[in-house]
Image: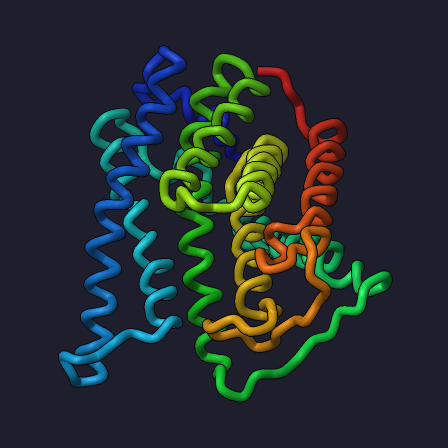
Length: 290
């Protein structure tokens, strides 16, 4: 089975450790430029479909356009890997071999994480599920399902597909920490007002993705986990009162323990679960030898 940490040896990758983070930031910047154009194009197409220049996009159209615009990461990464490093994008970890099996394993792990974080607390706290919401058709959920896979593939391609193997040539713990720090800095640059609890859990989620890539040697499992997690907490069981489409909405007590207004993504419970899961996988499943 192909190994993303072996594939990096076949390209003209710089031997200086600090070049990797700079290239990753360049990919992020180029992705944002392409994504901004794509988002405007998608909204323009929506206006054309509705047949009016006075069209104001709904919350769902705006969010979907934002998510799908992240497909811009693929030409951005291709420019660097093919024109500068002389290797194909496939060497970054999206191998065809056993891809479906790894993706399905990611979905299963994602559902397991969702069960721990979203449903287990209902044993101790009063949590109720409202729905299905009749004003939100299933087709929107399907579109979101696809869109979040695009976002997951883009994020993981830069941080765990490119940066992690490049830094791992020097030291794997250093590579894991470095790729997570660059990922969280990228999140903060896109959303400077992101609350601290969300930033902490984003960092831990990036840490979990990196550990999964170190374990499985490809990107599919980490992609499946991130995509299924995002689409579930935002569009299958979203917090009560959200404006975007969700098949169900969850009413739960306020407070940071279960996330409060930040949703489950900012909960202390999620922080604890991610720390335990990262610790277990790092100690039991990952080889830290270069």
